Image 1 (cartoon, rainbow, N blue to C red):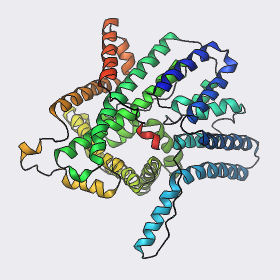
Image 2 (tube, rainbow, N blue to C red):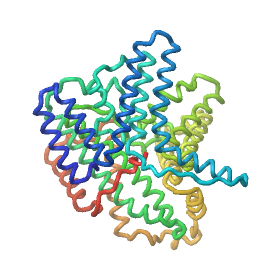
Image 3 (cartoon, rainbow, N blue to C red):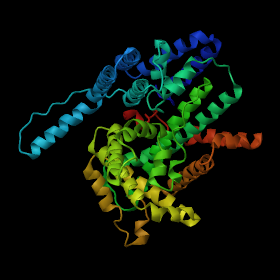
Length: 476
């Protein structure tokens, strides 16, 4: 069930109505049933996987609470991690490992019969696996106690607004809210509705419009060169940001309707003046997860320069692999890790430059260009496609008049896209140091209604028509 489908347009009002009609003690059961129904709308059989992961992590936490020795606790947390990650590995990474092994064997002139399992990747498996792992690890560390209310815990794992594409929530935040008593707050509900409007604008107007051209080029990259490759590189940056941050806004807005606060997952990432800042603003829940459960346990920055760089690189390589079972994703993660290593090495030179207004603007532009170029590895199906793009992106630049002529987009298309991006940029500038929705709520009612009416009309008339498209991060 997609957020922008007709079925969700019926599903959400029904859940919203019954949630506020029911007494507090029944609401978690409603949310649990709604979440499982929401997940089963993709593939009913895969509900077994989320239930398995939920039961394993739930029981592991209780066993950790009863364990008497450190050795017992380590065995329990290792066993829970193995079982949860085994499910993720089989469905997401097994074919990748088998194919990589076959490629290595072929390079060594060893004949290997290819073995491939025909398994469809369950939506959200990476997200709920990491959410349950963080819970077990936090109980093991003694940061939180084990949850004994299975219904509340199962709702925490499967909470439908953030189930399939995050944010990756922590127990101390979401689970506490699921168990707490709530009273309907019109202000919060209106805030959630406004946030959802911006999410739909980002997804349906910006991301899906950009996707038309991005998909066209990446389906046959060798048919394009020069400015068209530059445009599609820029458009994919807009697509993936509009798509993923749009999903997050709809998820946060939906949760707000139920008086539940999810963590902010995006905070104007393309206005970052460094790659490090970009990752503090992009997919914040995942970045903080890898920081707390991978980077810091490896030693973090509390070690020598070389060891710290290795920790950083390993963390980003793991992050790249989390995003997809392909070496292009690993390379994409590695590029970001190396970029931060370079930034750390040159910090004495870069920090004074960024403190000046002109230097800060140049840094923002440089980081955006870097991220857009790195996205090529994220989007390209093969290294060959990525190599072609970088090898032909400046083709024809000698003839400037001809270079800036695009066969991909008409002038009308460019004007519309410029308008969409300008609106997004204005929203992000407001959101950079606060909350854009709250800042807009401070203006007069007439201006508020005008802004949201215009955004609503753009969603209705300027979004791509046809079957709803899935969100990009559903594949992770």
